[in-house]
Image 1 (cartoon, rainbow, N blue to C red):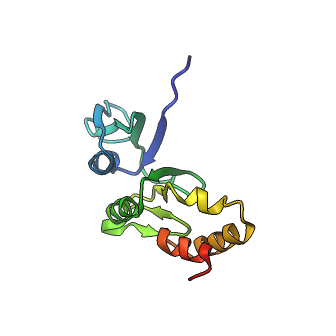
Image 2 (image 1 turned 180 degrees about the vertical axis):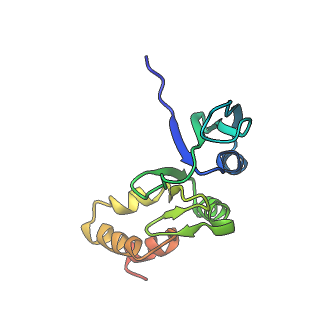
Image 3 (image 1 turned 90 degrees about the horizontal axis):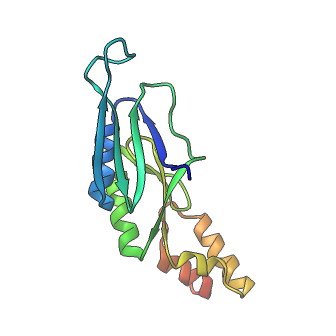
Length: 158
């Protein structure tokens, strides 16, 4: 079977990004490859770094400018609760990251992330259409997900 992993193209911050992600989510830094003679970057500079997060393998590549990240690709984090949402959000938006909408953020490298509490799906899929609609409307007004506010909206007490 073919092995599939995620490949992320950075200008020149591949190692910094990999180290940040491993510091937040755990995992490890793996093999580092360096540019050789005649490459499009200085000989000996870092070309790529392998890393793992939660058992998933990634490659971070220093390919130079010209290929920015977009919201159409994001890394999805299933956070256990609001405290974990807040902690991860704060770490990924530090030093230049920013919230986008509905639980999406862009970190300081431009990588898009969705930081979603595990309970959110149940609120959005509530069998009571009024509850699910109120929860959805609350979520659509948020940047960082606030689970308590979504629950209050679903209950009609917001």
